[in-house]
Length: 561
Image 1 (tube, one colour):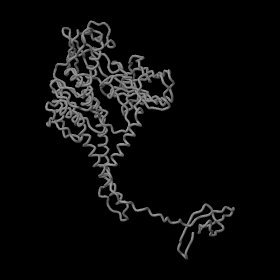
Image 2: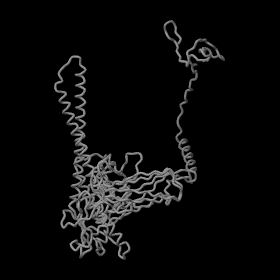
Image 3: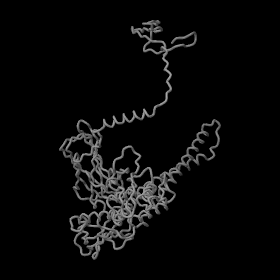
Image 4: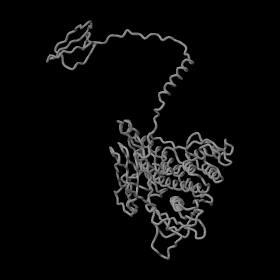
C-alpha cells in the first residue's frame, strides 16, 4: 500500500509478506515494485497500466449499393447450393436395421396387489398401490439387429389403466446378429376403462455408418389379449345403450370370434350372445342375429362399448380376410350424440370447477400471507397490543386453504377418470362415423386427429378449445360448399370457452356433413360434389423440447418396422 500522508494512493496484493521493498526500472518500464520475502523469493509488481493512445478512425459514410449486394448474395447462394449437391442430410430410418418381435408367453391371470406393491405405467401416474383384483400377462419381446448399434434405450409406452414393469431397458452396445430377449409384465388395473389394447415399444439407438454416427428410432406395436382387460360373464338381456353393426357376410359364431371367452358346454348358456365384464365393473353384451348379418353391442355404460366395437370389427375383418366376398361393416343408425355430449359436459364442468377452486386457493393464500404479515408486525412491536382475533382468523384461513387444496386434488383425480371416458367415447364416435360414412383409413386418421381421441395427453390446452379449432377448420376448408364459409370462423387464440353450446353445434354440423358424403381430403383431389382444398394435417402443439411418440400417436399407423 502506498500512502500520501494519510491518503492511500495505491494498493496491491502479493502472495507473501515482503521484508524489503524497492522501486526499479526494467527495459524502460518505470515504477516496478520489487519485493523480497524472508525465504528469498523476489516478486515484481507493476504499479498501474500504460494508457492506450489508439483512437479508432472515423467511419466513412457511404451509400449502400443494393443492386451490387443482391448480386453478390445470389452468387454466394449459388456457390453454397452447388457445394451441397449430393450431400443432403437425410434422417436415418433404414428398414431392417433393428427388428422387434413380440409374443404373449402366458395367458392373463388374476393377481392381487397388496398395499405397497406397484408397477410402472406409461402415464404420469406410475404407482398403483391399492389392493384389488387385477389381471396380468407376460409378453416376450426380442430385439435383434443386423448392424452394430450403441446407446440403445428401449421404452414401453402404455395408456391407463394398463401398466407395465419394467418399462425401460438400456444396452451400451448390441452386436450384429445378437438377439436380446426381454420379458414385460403388463398389469390392467381397475381404476378406469380402456380405450384400446395396444402398447408401443420404442427403441432409440445410435447407428454408425461410414464413420458417422446417426441417431435412429424403431417402433413396434404390441397387441395385448382382450382377456387382459375383461372377464366372461352371463349375457344381459336388456341394456340402456345399444350399437348395431351391419355386415355383408354370413354371421359367425361368437365363440369362434372370441375363443378365449368360450365357456363349458351348457345348454342354459345362449350360443348367440356373449358377455364381458371390465375390471371397473361395466358389463358389455354382444349378440349376433340368427336371421340377419347384424351384431349388436349393448351396455349400461356408453363409453365401455368402444373397446368391444373396435375389437369386433377387427376380428370380423381377420375372419373374412380370405373369403371370396370382401368383408364390409357399416353403421346405419343415428350417431349417439346425446350420450357423447353428456360426457363432454361432464368433462367441461370439472374443468370449470377446477379453475374456480384454483382461483379460490390463490385468494385464500394471499389472505393467509397478509394475516401472517400483520401478526409478525404485532409481535415485533415493542409495545404489546391485542391481536384482535388475527390468530383465530389465521387458523380459519389455514383450514379453508387445506380444504380447498384437498378438493383440488380430488377434482384432478375425477378429471383423469372423465378424460379416459371422453377418450373411449371419442374412439367409439369416430369408429361409428368411419363405418357410417364409408371413410378411408386416411380419413379415419384425420377424423381421430380432429376429435383428439387421447385428451389425457393434453396439458397446456383443453380438449374443448382444441377440438373446436380443429372442427371449425375442417368446416371452413374441405367441408365448405362455397370454399369460403364465414359462418364458422376459426378462433385466433385457444381460450377456455364459457360453455359447450357452440362446440356441440359445430360437432353436429361436422358429423352431419360427413354422413352426407363430405370427405376429409388432404391431397387436394376432388371428392364428389365437395370442393378440394389444401388442408394441412392437424398436429397438436407440444411444449416440451423432445417428446416421444405415444400409443395414440402411432396406433393407427400400424407396425411399419
